[in-house]
Structure formats: C-alpha cells, structure tokens
Length: 465
Image (cartoon, rainbow, N blue to C red; front, side, top):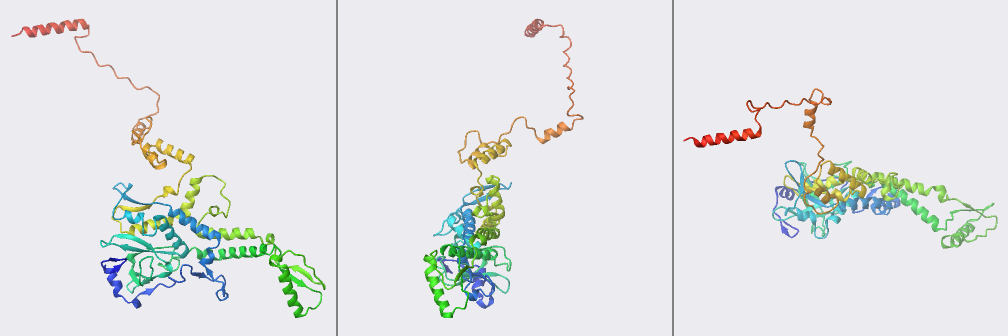
C-alpha cells in the first residue's frame, strides 16, 4: 500500500478493511458533520429558519470562550513530552530511544511539539474529538503524527464490532484520496462520550447558549452606546395621525436624530411627544449579565473564573495551591489521556512510558520552593545534588550525591528495642560491672620486680642445652 510516499506492508486488519465494502461499515450517527465550525444546536426552537444558528465561529468571538480554550491549550502545549523507563522498583528515569524519541520531539514536518499539543487540545475542546493519523516506516514504527480535521473523519463500525475511520482527502496530512483505515492507524482522543462511546461531546454544548447571550448583551450595549446612549422610543400625538404623516415623521426622525446625528435638539410640534422605550444600561444590569454568562462558560470548561478575568482572585496568596486546584479540576484528565494514548498509539515496549513534564506547570514561588527544598533535604528524601538539579537548575557539587540526616535520629527498630525494656524511661543508673580479678601470685609484684623476673627466665632458657 502506498501511503505518504512509502510502501507500507498490509497488516491483517488493513487487508480486512480493504476487503469490506462501504455498505458493511455502519457510520456513527452525528460524527463528521458541519466542518471545523459545526452547528451545535439552535438557540431556540425555530432559530435555524431565522438564520440564528449557534456556530462555533460565532461562539469563539465571545472572549471568555476564547480565553478558556486558549488557556487550556497553551498550558498543556508548553509541557515537554518525556520518554521514561520504569525499573523493577517502580522508579522512572528519562531516557532516549531512537525509535520513539524523534517523533515525540517533532511529531510532523510542519508542527513542533508545542503546536501539536495545542492543536490536539483545541480540536478536543471545540469539537469533542481529536483524530491523529499515524505514519509508519517499513518497520511499522510510527515516524509522524497528523491531527485531522474532525469534520472530515467519520468513525464506522463493522458487523463484527471492529472500529474503522473514514478519512476524506487531506493534503496537509498526505491523504490524496478518501480512505478507510482500521482503528490501529488512528489515535482517537475524545471528551466525555455522553451519547455514543466513539463520539465525545464538546463543552460548547453546555455553554454555547450562555456565550450567545453574552454576545447579544455586548451587541445590544454596542448599539446603545453607538446611538449616543440615547434609547429608542415612540412619538405620540393627542389625535389621529394619517399613515403618510406617520411615514414622513418616522423617516425624518431616523435621518435627523439617530446614528451620527444622535443627541441633536429635536423640535416637536402638533402635540408630538417622545417617549423612551429601552432600558438604560444600569437598569438592564449589563455587567452582572456578562459576568454570569462568563462564569457559566468557565463552569463548562472547569476553569477557575479568576484565571480568565471573570471573577475576583482568591483572597489567599498561595500560587502552588491555586495551580494545583487548576491542574486537578481542569487539566489532569486531559494530560493523562494524552499520555495513555501516546503509549498505546506508539506501541511502546513494556517498561517505557510517556510523561508530560508537570514541573513547567506547577512551578512554585521562590519562598515556597526554598522551604519545600529545605524540608526534603532535612528529611533525607533527596540528596543536595538532586535538589540543585531539579528545582534550581544548578550543577552538582562534590559530596552532594548522598542524602543526609542528623545524628540524633534513630531507626524504628532501635526505638522498638528501647521500648521493650521493663521501664525504658527509668532514671535509675545501670549497674556498673565488677572489675576483672587480678591474676593470682602477681598482686605483690611491682613493675620492676616483674621486669627482673622476666630477665632471669630469659637467661635460664639461654643456658639450657
């Protein structure tokens, strides 16, 4: 099979996919419709007939939606993808592998890893699904990954339950014709599948109406202040006004006293009276309405409102705790999903895993980092060189490879032996052992006598034959 300019050996699954006809594959309902900016739903019944379509192209013009999507995508995009190896003790170490490291550093020819991850997350947040096409070499090793247009991908299921994907022409991804590929050639990352296991649902589904309401509030406010902050109203007269006079008064009023002419002095005669109809900005509570719609959007994306300028920042100043909260409720599931899908999609050998470097995201302030490092060093959890390298990006120093503990610390085993005594905290001094008895016959000898005795014994030994 010729794909991406390379001859790819047909796998069993690929041969089966080629043999099946399109009629045998059942497309998943609701997949691949509407382009990059599909119609999400009608703002109200009958809105579609009135050209009031709720489209992503419109919803993205709402600042809070744009802020939430770009915040999440940029935060995940800046995380470095690491290839790590786990040893028998469960300790992971970053390694380099010629089969996997190149495609993790540079997924394809036109995207670096940052833009690749941003594209991945944006597609998932806005469309509910991300489809990544894998390119293999003659060994079957994945050498490139291409994120596809979700509107040009349709999941399909065969009669025996196998999953396939119908891909339309995509020159950027190297697809010169429509093709159906097995699930082994696609990395499919989806949001929570509310309606079908193969179709994720975008957060826009939950917050689209709030975003449109916010746009309407902004549009109404723009028109209001564009009219010189003068509200529209009605001209009334005490008596009957002929239709031709009504048309003339309306045209004159719109021409002379609206738009750029708003605010001019109007002279009314014949008992005419102008009565304002629209509410003023303070009466409509525009700021409160906009804040509510923004908070609704943040709720759908699980983003703390203060991070996109909607709500006030928390009263306490703990950067690490705030970042941890944001990571736990918003980013963690997205990050772990990417790691797992890359492990499976690249078919990593046992013991190898991909990890997104969270140190870039969960950076502590200087005071907190210094205190945390001191606690780790004092507890013997890390060595000085480990702390210098990881948290301060400093080189190793001589003698800093071993963790340190203070001398007065005791092991649990030693403390258990102490507690096994009848009264380990008794202040009675221990018994002093009796001195060793002196050898018999030598009590009366002093040093000089002993030396003389030793000399005589030597002479006697030398005199013997």
